Length: 464
Ligand code: NCD
Ligand code: ZN
Image 1 (cartoon, rainbow, N blue to C red):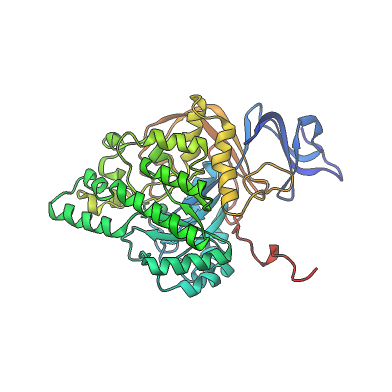
Image 2: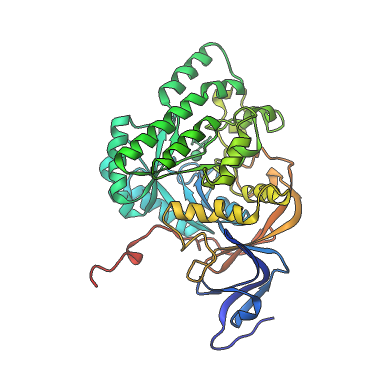
């Protein structure tokens, strides 16, 4: 049914169950010029030019994934903004934050501007661009923020020559600058000398197996770095975010940091919640290599408890696609680390909802509200409220389907969840009022996605 008239809004998505972190109620969401203008019962909705009846399905805010590697510029054989944002759209993700380990790396204001321009012309969903923190660009952090960086990425524990790890002196200086900019610094928290030392020792011993990768990334390397960055955050006042938390031994440190009032948030990823080293054979053998590693059984349950309790604030994916040739190599040291995730995260989590292990309001908190709050986007993003961007996802909690790598949108589509049957699927994704994906298909032209950084247009007026 559709009505038109002078007071008609653009779109009403109704006949559903509207989900917020506080609960669920039958109703609808009305959209005008890309913004939500009403949320409530169907009878209270204004007339609309287009009305979609979702027939009892659930209506949630679009998910925000603050940790993706979309690969362009530089690695378009692995992934492109077009393929990756198609994956995001079909996966129910309406905002992504792209990591700086592209080529060129996003370590200069020009690189920030170039990536925003590239993404703006190709993306189907909204995006933020991370600026890299290095020893040589501390004076460029403020200009990068000015150019549109939404947050910063600090690598502690990485051997990627494009984005080397800064020394602790440089880290302290950089955190002081980032604190003054009011942005958050996402940190890959591992201890570099421990990784280097153990990696050399394991290689010298002739080890080439997946377990050697885990031995290299021993728990204490993660625990030490979380402890150090929390202390640096306390000292400098810089807000930090712990990327891809995978280790149960780090959880008490995060809890202690929060108790002390440190501005710290954390994420974990589906592969740490649903896989362990014991699943390696089924999950692709050496292809399960990811940094930091999927650990032994015994980590997933405490990570899950931390996520559902809010100690770990949010779910991200560390979407890191590579080609099959890059993943299928004999020696673990030659296997490219990571795999795609942005298209499969929501359905893996909805599967837990269908099992009764998670409620949908809890999922909305960890996938939508918490990332928006942590990175200064709330309530523009991550909420179904009048005034919020109309980033809306319809989910069908009864839809059962297998995860098949070859059907994923990503170029590097090898997934450790190959063949998993999940119950619960995003079936419609709306970005600022435009339907971008429906029933697993892209239905919008690329180039509608926008950078979410707070630019000059939204800055406070100079006077008044
Ligand atoms: C990341 C990638 O491929 O970009 N891979 C990963 O395993 N997480 C690189 C990285 O963050 O180390
Ligand atoms: Zn990453």
